[in-house]
Amino acid sequence: MDTLACKRLTRRAGQDSDESMLKMHIKLQCLFPSEEAQDLVEYALVVALIGLGAVMGMGRLSTQINLAFKTISSDLASALS
Image 1 (cartoon, rainbow, N blue to C red):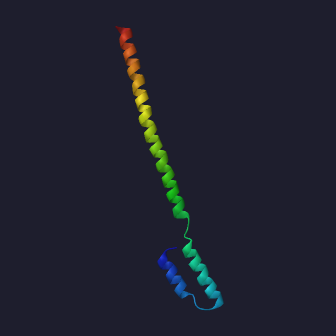
Image 2 (tube, rainbow, N blue to C red):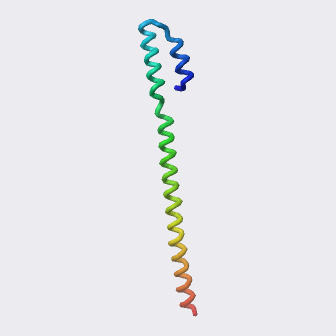
């Protein structure tokens, strides 16, 4: 719930005991916002971390694959000559 909506809802509540409880409940909801956005950010960070690890791993892996192909190429060249 955003701040503007919280202010509007608390203004509407009157001074009766039931309405003051409603007002307090609304204020407590405004203090503790929804966790949906937080979960979304956490998932985005996990995905970014996995992507970063994959990119770094692929860089190292590509170097090893390149070295293996160079070794095979030189072995084939020396075997054919």
